Image 1 (tube, rainbow, N blue to C red):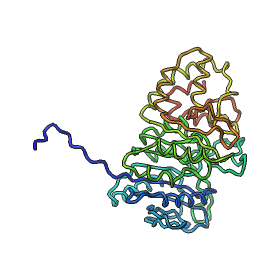
Image 2: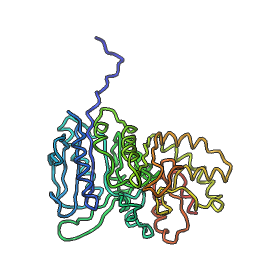
Image 3: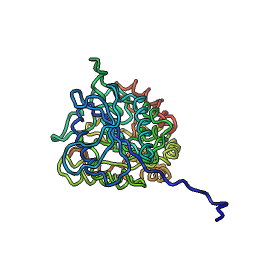
Amino acid sequence: MCSHGLEEKTPPSTPATLIYMIADNNLDYYAMQNIRQMERGLPDNAAPVFVFLTRRIGANPSHPYLLKITQNKEDNIIRSPIVQTYRQQNTADPAFLRQVITDVKNHSKKNNAQLRRLVLWSHGTGWLPEGAPFDEIDFNYTATTAKNRAAAFSFGLDETGYGDGTEYQKEMCIKDLARALEGERFELLIMDACFMGTIEVAYELRETSEYFIMSPAEITSGGFPYEEIMSYLVSPEIEPLAIAVKFFNNYYNLKGALQTAAVSVINTRYLEDLADAMKTVYNDYAQYRDYIPITNFLQYDRTGSNYFFDFWDFVSRVSEQTQNDYSHVRKIYNNVLPYYLRTPKIFDFLDIIGTSGLSVYIPNTHDLRDELHEYYKSLAWTRNSNAVLLFD
């Protein structure tokens, strides 16, 4: 048979998934619960799922290690085998994350698969850098006994130390995370950490994945319902909406402060267009900001920190003041954010009914933030969207 002129397509590879869990902190218990959920939810003959885990001091094993998840519906004991171990070290180091990704790629090849999906699991506070002046925020506050995943800056919190008695507390700023993932192009990146659904985070990581699933608000310590989403994580085609719906339903069906969920599906293809379109909005706001106080802007943080404002609420208020039509910006924003699901409140305390699914930082005159603002100016979003105008 003549095949001249026909393009031969390479069959899609089996998708492997890495779940990178920094639980060397007060989330250790929930890491164990989530891994048990993964084992219960893994389908028969599933594509490979690898879990990197680092635990609190005194855990067994106490050193970081890599699991290959195996199905276990019989008991509540983790049965997945350890396929690689690591010496005790800072697992929030971007170079170490990159090494684990390389190791999982090699293990995936042995399983006739390709690493195409990544879950980053730990504490988080969006775009804020390590050591940011966050003193005015008390993330230990809860409306009930419900707990959250906001206790660090940016992504990850490794508290153990180097094994020589030297203690430290290390987080990974979003620029370091972008460098760690440089050159990667996943199909799907899930951030199982609080406040990571910011335009600054999404834009900084825009080249690393086709789709993101992130929360602009707090995530309870239980995290994503892994038993419910495993079939979607290992499916041949990515199904970000199905995963987001499972996350939302898991918490929507609870009561009181536990009915807490805000989850966004982000299409990275349109993020460059959004940055370009926002140049006009930022230019207009820079001229009229004295008439647009941030006092009543919608926020995703129940402590009112003035770090995580709702993106579209900001644009709408600028439009209202300037009488400028930003419908073209809205169209692009809808492409960036095809799906957003949220409960009425966060921890039965913060009303988020009017929110749109992504947060954005609006600089203000806070006395403690000069150094932080210098960091913010260095972010790709700030430079490419002309948000730097807001610091003049």
